Amino acid sequence: MKGYKVAVVGATGAVGREMLKTLYERLFPITDIVALASGRSAGHPISFGDKRILKVQNLETFDFAGWDIALFSPGAAVSAIHAPRAAASGCIVIDNTSHFRMEPEIPLVVPEVNPHALARFRKRNIIANPNCSTIQMVVALKPLHDRFKCKRIVVSTYQSVSGAGKEGMDELFANSRAIYVNDPVTPQIFPKNIAFNCIPHIDKFLDDGSTKEEWKMAVETRKILDPDIAVFATCVRVPVFIGHAEAITAEFEHPVNVGEARDLLRRAPGIVVQDERDDGGYVTQVDCAGEDATYVSRIRRDPTVPNGLGLWVVADNLRKGAALNAVQIAESLVTQGLLKQAA
Image (tube, rainbow, N blue to C red; front, side, top):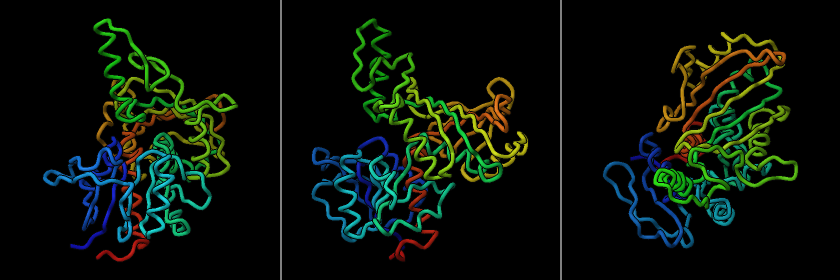
């Protein structure tokens, strides 16, 4: 069987598990696969497909020589140490953390949007996966930008707790249960109680009053889509387990026709349009969980600005927002002939 040797780093986390699942489901050509995590997880079993069980190996002592691709999602501090080590051994790193995204020599890639950027990865042998909220936004805006040229974006996000990992999901469950049984609620992962609440605070606050998550959406969009686009984001954590939603208002240089915009979105790769102006004729976070597509609903003209358009965009943050995008990058390396010939 022809294929590649693939390592999944951070395999015991929510995104790492989703990477293993996605590689299997999409039949990525694999001759060997290894699950890597910290030493405390070494030896633990983890599933790959329906029948195969992998034993987690220790990232600290793993030798990446001879391995073709490593999908990293272990946290930024860990990637900072081990991604360059893997890359130096000749293994191509696709990193899901924030650590390398804004380094000029490292491509930041969404395959439906800027696959051409992959041509630059050899300088460092590392490719960065964008932030989950950025990915679904640029997928939705790419066909519209190509036709009408986007110049300004105002976006409010409604981001699920899985964006904070398994611990975030556990806290939503625990806090919800505590409220039901009248126990005290003590936030640990989030700055306030997340159960039955919305928190307009994701990541650290910066000097200008924005959060780092909001900053990421702005700078990553400019690196991926167009350096001249102005972005103003408000990022909110909501009591949903999986799936991010975004209310986007985009202003374009050229006149926008709603019908044409809808047709462009329907024809674009990776997008599913569900835009019925009726009860339930739109996609919600619950609807998108476990799905690969970026869903677009509520397409309408914004009359408050010239050439404005409003969109409701929803995607599974663990799949398209993380694992699926990383696997699609690997697939793009294969289709573009940027990987060595499979053995």
